[in-house]
Image 1 (cartoon, rainbow, N blue to C red):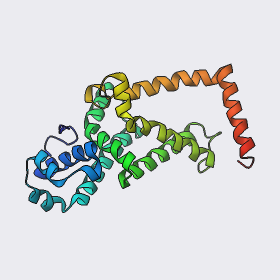
Image 2: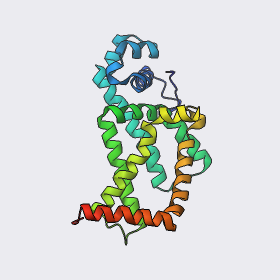
Image 3: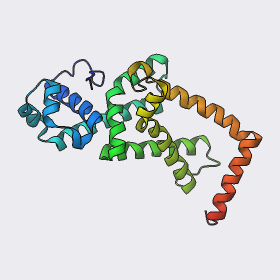
Image 4: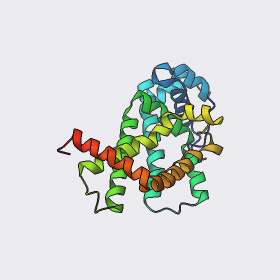
Length: 222
């Protein structure tokens, strides 16, 4: 996998940053077990000794990658939540900044890692706040119903990243490549809009009621 410098600011061109980017790409492509210090060093154009000097071990490399990915992904999400001007230019910068990190995250979500768990929890907690603040009469903070809906929502969104190879195969493009990175978000927004209308119509409402009735029958104390 080629290494992109889009995950770091222009001034961050140190050997440590090059090694970190090489490790992000190596872990994303081969997973933690398949990645090697030598491959990271070769991709970064440095010696294994320099990799060890900066990070100590492969575990140290993963810790640095985890921290970087958490900062990049949560930083972008935080700007949206804080009311940033969500213009096409803003979104372009966000997608370009997180490209390599998202590929790393896709692998981490499958393998399981501290950063994957943290980002899933952060996403679920953000969804809980969204439900509670948008529809307070239906979703009280801390209620089991809110926690369940929010966790499913987080899984739905992160699932598109985990399954990016299948999406790419089906669509004939690399959906995580910079030029295509907005496709998933656009599709999700359109799916939400249309499914919202469908579920509110007669057929969708009957399905929703049937699922709700089944759940209450199986879990009468819910």
